Image (cartoon, rainbow, N blue to C red; front, side):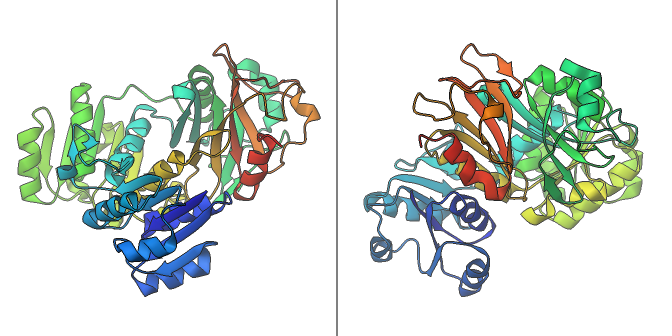
Length: 447
């Protein structure tokens, strides 16, 4: 598939890195020579200096055989004009990064000829919303219409599974335990085996049906109380969306911002939310507003240092869960080691959403696992797949990946075992390390 990306910023960089790993023909267009140099050093794709809105320049690159054109610069107007120009020149699918509410009506882009509009802030809102309601989770991914879930959680010091191998845990818990598809330890992503010992502080990812995952999480992370009280730092687009959603769901919300004008506007639009003019890193303010009684503390200001500090203070003073918004995606895997329960990057969420838009062969959906480069993929099996009709134990499945769950044709979620036989119509969810993605796609392909 030929893919052209306009913009080598954080979104474009991560998107190019993800798509080029899948053997797509990726070209990045970037005006800033300094960004071009950095991208050339780290990405395995073509990078050219130029203007993504220039018709002649796009024609020279070749729009008629371009399967996907993604404009993801920091400027909405550049992205929109680039996509409309690419459409006129014959490009296939067009994706634009558009942040301004003025381009949307009822959450839909008002412009024609753009197939997908991505708002990084709203993608981050969706990610935070999942983490808010899955109070034990540090990462949440859903597949097959939500029937299959992959959820990450930190292992508590007094967790029942800490210090035990996966074989020991499965022997003791049986059907009460879900399949562990990966373990993140000290920033390293591991493929677990039966003798893998789960340690306190590990971030484990379990896969299966909602019920199976919820049961397993109870043994990994202390069960959390019902979501009643949430404190949000940042009355920006992300904070307001979160506060409005929680307000409608009957949750008690306190919203803090140091900008007085933002507080006034937030107070006018949020009638059941307590809006506080102040600094989210002010310990006296946090304590006076009962941070120790907060179920989830979320910091989503535009300053990531403020977000990090606010979350660390809230965690220290008793907030049950903290969620931090960061702009630099490479911060994401580091923050859990500092005591922040979950980290969300709008840019990473945006590039992940665009990558899911790119279908290849039997791949139905794909999610990136933080900044590790690892992926969780969903496959739909057709009668052309070469892996059908044999037990998994007899197949040469890549060792850099693991099958996490199978949704069979009757709609039942099956935890894969050695004797599991795949059939036409099954949906299969797979976790893969970066260097195993192509091998996994070949395994479920038609070769």
